[in-house]
Image (cartoon, rainbow, N blue to C red):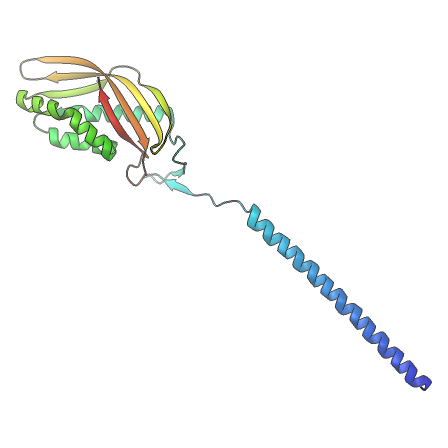
Length: 204
């Protein structure tokens, strides 16, 4: 083999060897970049923060969503709400009692409403027969006597309050003290904007 041919062959070998090294280097760089991208994607998948959802009140105020086994209102708010509900449930007269009782409906769950109606059935008959005006007021400080999660019912509060009911007719006025025990549960805000409802209403 001539020297010129040998030199040309050597140059060709060097060229392909250099190209081969360049290709291998490019492949290694591409593989490294791909590996970095895979790591970044996996990190995003497993470490990406969950989106935060929130509800809005009727006034447009943002409210955080709470799990059904967690309290969603302050104790003071619950007590005010329960007191207002108790007054609405025991303020009516012999003329407008159907409309007045209906105003208390939004405070109750379906089960609580049925329980409440059963408890005032005989009282309504007495009011109609004797043409009475009935006014209930909270006569002392309400307290949350118990609260916590119950199986199948979510988070439950039991609020106890002293309650004074005045019965007034054309001839006389009488008053009677009671203890009202209200059991409240969480409900969807689509059912009640407050997110709670009375599941049991007891007067003793």
